[in-house]
Structures are given as C-alpha cells and as structure tokens.
Length: 268
Image 1 (cartoon, helix red, strand yellow):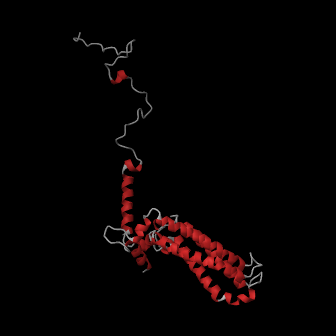
Image 2 (image 1 turned 90 degrees about the horizontal axis):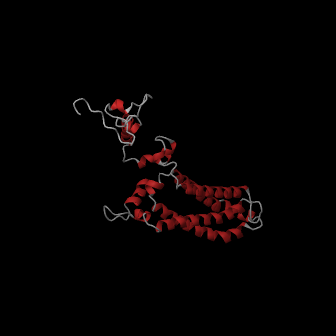
Image 3 (image 1 turned 180 degrees about the vertical axis):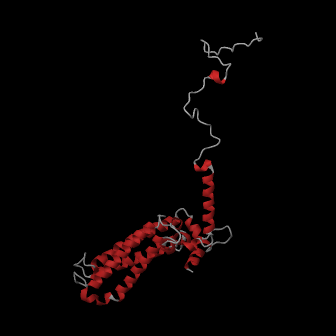
C-alpha cells in the first residue's frame, strides 16, 4: 500500500497528459530547485544535531555539568525545534523529488535511517513524558540518574547513525540489481515489488542464452578469427625466396631496377 502511494506520487501526481511529467519528475529534473532543498536538508540536519547533542551531553553528565538542565533546555530547545521542523520539511520534499518509489523505497540505507529516526522520536516522547517528570530532583545535579543518561546516549547514538545512513543513500552498493535474489537484503529492500511487472526468470534465461551464443561465436569468445590473415611461417621455417615463388623473377640490377627475365627460346 505504501509502495503504491509512493508510486502514485512519483509517476501520476500533477501529470496532466500522457507524455507530461509528474510534479516529482519535474522537481527531479530541475536544475537548481531540488539541489537547493537537498542542501538545506543537510544543513538543517547538522544544525539540529549540533543543538540536540548539547542537551544530550548534559543529560549524560559529560558536558555543561555546572549548568542546570532546565536552564540549558530553555535556551537551546527552541532552536532545536525550529531546525527539526525545517529538516523534516526539506527531507520530505527531497524524497518526493528523487524517485520516492524506485530510489528511496528500495534502498537499504534509507530504511535503516527511517528505523533509527523512529527510535529517536520514541526516545523523545519517552523522555518528555516519563523521564522528565522527575526533572526537579536531578535538574542541577552534575551527575544525572541512569535513566536520564540512557535517554541522552540513545538520542546521540540514533542521530549519529541517521546522519551516516543518510549519506550512504547516495551509493549503490546494495541496490536491488546488485544483490542476489532470495537473500536477506533482497527481501529487506522488497525488491520483488520493484520487479513485479517483469519476468525475472525469462530475463535470466535470455541472458544465459546470449552468453551461450557469445561462447559459441569465436569472434566474441576470443577464439580464432576465421577471417584473420594467417601468420607468416607459423612453423618457423625460412621464408621462400622470391625466385621460388615467382620463377621468372630476377634480383635487381646494379642501378636498383629489376633485370628483365631471360627470354625463352623463340621470343628473341
């Protein structure tokens, strides 16, 4: 269902004619608009990560230990939320303009990024609705309780992995056409949906027949070329003299011109 929705976004939404482009295709083919959204997404992601890591380090008791958590949170959190909103918006637009069904949906790195993004969001809700209820007890403590440290460490780890996996999306190491059918990665990326309208068995059989034809064709398989000029003296025998091949031939005279052949009787 999600794949069909992304497929509709990529190929149908905004297309007014049979030969026209959808909004996703038009955005992807734009010269400056899509790169602007992608660049803004990366910048806001780093801005968000940098500000939330300040809070995470305080929660783990590693940095800003002499600053109460409430004071630090009140100063940094508005910036963090603004960066988070811009990051999500530009991320959605970037995915919409870059083949959401055929490029992102079947990408292993994108799926891992979404998994850890979900874990990070769950951790945020867990902290604000469970852990932060006892904030008065550890607000000014240099060494917060263990549950606060765990929440801060989980948040920092998730966002580090989200950034790493997001950068790996640009590489095609584990695309569907490069993984083995039936493997874990093939199933994890749901590659069957990408090829559901294609007969892969027939394509593999056709490819196998083409390879067999190339093996049988000496020109394509590297065998002997029947039209190639045979090498001279393949057995290493001395080359025949010109007089042996052309009996009437005579060596050249002193001036470099060939001497005429001796006349046969009756030609004088």
